[in-house]
Image (cartoon, rainbow, N blue to C red):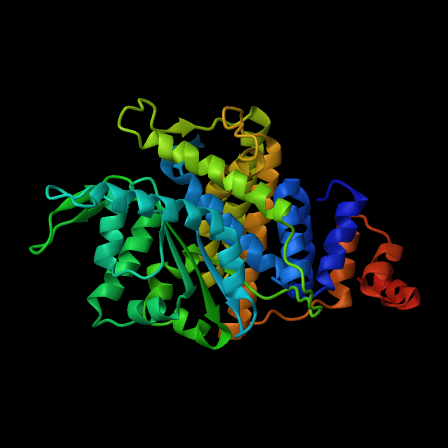
Length: 423
């Protein structure tokens, strides 16, 4: 049962909307819940660079996820979780996917540029052992190189690609050792599993808790390849957060995003990177920070996860598996939401409140519906349209009025009245 007439009308209204319309509504709710520094970048990116809002949102989430690393964690409902997540931006050529990623990851790139210059200075004219390079983003690397970079930067590595089709193609090729190892690395890394590398040609090493993040664009016609050749069966698909094209701006402008807007966002990422860098200092005694929940926030999280478990009973196979992973991703989103809400002022010593959990739930549900759209477009499993009779049954069950049904469906009130008496 629903708690208010507004909630009833919202549910009835959603029954008559397309999934894309609901996603646009959800997107606006999420943006409204973000700090002004972040929502302003999304709005201005859309206005001045025509970057779809949903693309920039995913790219920003990736950047916060990568910048936070293993420096912060939560321990809720008996599980320890970090904030690493994987994103796939689905679109066509020219949909500004790359610009979204570039805009959001720019502060991390600049930090990597600075660390690279330091690396060159430290190793210039050096005859003895080479000092390892500090690096966060990986763009073009073999799996061996990715393992090595992660070993030298254990807090996090961000795998950032304009197009992930090449990686998908490798992962689907049973004869490609590189592809199989990439998939295993990402599967294990999602839950921060151990990476143990033992090869004859390289020095052996071990990462006790891995932390990879992933983002990349993928054109519509290649989505079916993503679902093929073991990616679905292995569970890799269930770990991806898909972003479909929802918003479009056709008005060209000569000016770019206001500098102050980008500066404020960049500072939030820099604050996280500074925390991560400090924790990597050999002299730093405290390497990680646990973020505690308020009682209200933990109860909200508990009730939401119980609902996910309940929803699995009636779900179809692919949805059922995805709901299972949502029980993990909600933990990650809770921590990520906390980071986003507190990064501008570096107020990380506060508790995780219900505000963070509500934002996390909104994000989790947004990407879940995106996944359903991808399934419908790729597999062709469209749900049957909801009839007016179905809407009336739901309305009567929750004590909504005939007027509410007529308003949200657009069906004439006389027709609603006739059908009302039959159901």
